[in-house]
Amino acid sequence: MSIEKIGTKGILPSNLVVIADRALPVSAEIVSLLERLLEDARAGTVIGLAVVTLRTKGNYDLKLLGNATEKGELMAVAGMLAALQRMVLALDE
Image 1 (cartoon, helix red, strand yellow):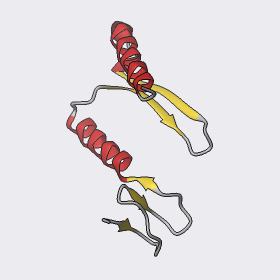
Image 2 (cartoon, helix red, strand yellow; image 1 turned 45 degrees about the horizontal axis):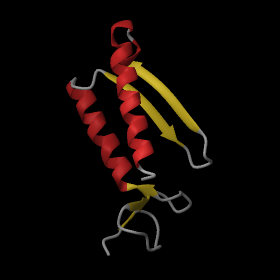
Image 3 (cartoon, helix red, strand yellow; image 1 turned 90 degrees about the horizontal axis):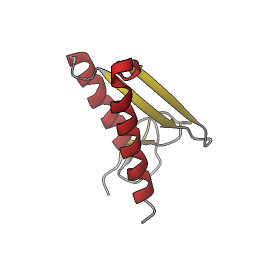
Image 4 (cartoon, helix red, strand yellow; image 1 turned 60 degrees about the vertical axis):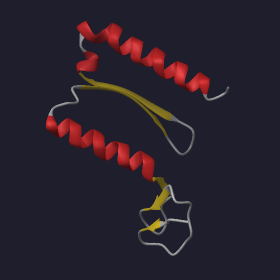
């Protein structure tokens, strides 16, 4: 089993990383995606975001940023959210 550990001696599944002794495990997949998005944003290829963030206590954040908030992009954003909804509903199949 491949394990990445930072500041801990625990054993975790290979897709989790502990970033501090008391921190909850963080999905390496989430960290990787965020790093790629940051690189793309710095390169200027990400011009807007529609973000849904699920928190550890079950609450969530919804954010529209950049071009995703512009009037001319509303239908594109609505389409992306509809596609996301289909993805979520397909998880139950």
